[in-house]
Structure formats: structure tokens, C-alpha cells
Image (cartoon, rainbow, N blue to C red; front, top):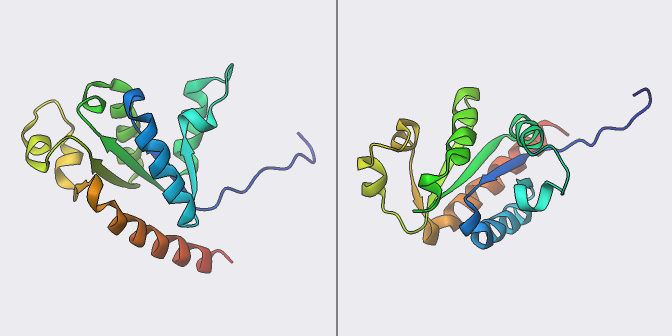
Length: 146
């Protein structure tokens, strides 16, 4: 469309989660926004009638990193693994936040992707460390794109 405006997103974080974990995912998304980053969360950013798959693909392309909320429910959801795979294949940062799982359970579960066994996993109770690191990355990114 000639003359159409496109919204510049900036530093965006994609939050992947399973439906039973929506409340926790919303809290994480709010904290991400407080760090100065945009956040994609399907329940907030996909409207009724939208092409869900197309919105997810677009958000993955636009996002610089992913937070995947790993819970016992998330480990059984194929869509979570599709999203992780998309970020892995693009070489983007993947941050796995554990809630209801231990690092040992993740590392020994043969169903889980190897990529999650190679990254530093964080417990939900330690997520403030991630938010501090995210603030620094957003600040650095903003300074280089000013």
C-alpha cells in the first residue's frame, strides 16, 4: 500500500507458553514491558478472526529473543516446540524459565529439544536476573539504533 505506515517495533521479546500458564505468562510480559522492550504474547496480541499461524510467524521474525515458560503443561504442547525451533533456527536468544520443573528434569527428559539442554535454564523465582539483563540489552540496542 502506497503511503501506508508501518509500526516500528524496536526490541521485542516473544513469550511462549501453554494455555494453562497464561496468567504467569502475562506477568512475565508486563515485566518485559517495564524493561523497555515490546512484548508479543498470543493472548494479548492475536485477535479473534486473525490468522493465528501468520501472526505467530510475523511475531517470531520481529522478535529479538524468546522467553519460553517451561512447565509440565508446556512440555506436552507441540506449538511451544515449533516456536522454540523457529527461534533456534534463526539463531536468536532463547531464555527458558522453569516453573514446576527442575533443570535435572529438563536435562534428562528425552522428549525435550536438545537446544533447551544447552542453555542456562532459570527458575521462575530467579527471573529478576533475566529482567536486569534484558534492561541492559534493550538499553544497548536503543543506543545503537538511536
